[in-house]
Image (tube, rainbow, N blue to C red; front, side, top):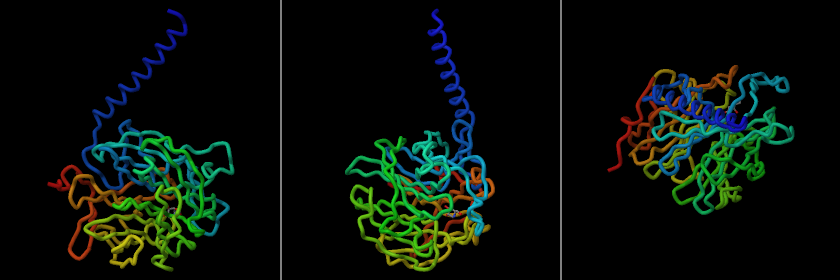
Length: 352
Ligand code: DGJ
């Protein structure tokens, strides 16, 4: 055999062996429940690295996008006034799953820019809370994320697009929507196809709801100011039974605080504050977590998962995830009770 053929053969065998090992790992180590706040491994046995996440359901598969955090955390010396713990921004990761419990790493779908220090995507900057929606007019997957400078002064939103849910995403750039600051953010796509970017603005004192253009790439110019001077962060929005719900946190850096939810008849408001949605152990500090997303479960009735990050501020890559089902009571009251673990395949009722 020629040397090159032997090398090719060896390389292919190695790849097959790795594939088989991964496959064997996944078969032997299937998760059956979601555990709150514990280490969560992907189907290759690696810790899931997708913080401040956002979810997308597309053609029978769930996609989980998140901050791909670098493995060392430091206190940014440029910001002595608050606990500005930082880690290298490693771009946006993606995992996929059919059962919400076992997640396969699909790669870093928005790559960091390792060479250009001035790029938004340079690891010295901040890439947080990525969210993806599908636009069925343009057939594009559109990602929005919080883009910031290393001292969080830039306060902007970045946009990227892809033709596939598992990327790669192409970065289009950043802006301040409606010329206002934008930090913690989420996206919400309404049933009529309209999409909104919801973000902490005005030094995080007021929450903006920015309607997007029909291609979801820019703000349309219509926006509302909500929870004025109430300092709400970490918004997560969903629609249930004719009402819009918005869960958010207070503003205390990486440290936990009490969550709050509000209800509205229209996405642009007016929002009525209802109170703390959490109950049980440590509900007054959101189970040591902070909201990031609410996922509606496809084909199931009254089935929504509230998702939280439990930040580990001194070791950010080792932050954990808390996912809990939302219970619906009368009069638009919701309850998110603490549970150590639960099984999504038996937690939700099928739609008949
Ligand atoms: C709280 C935010 O919700 C997080 O996403 C992050 O920006 C930290 N603040 C930084 O302190």
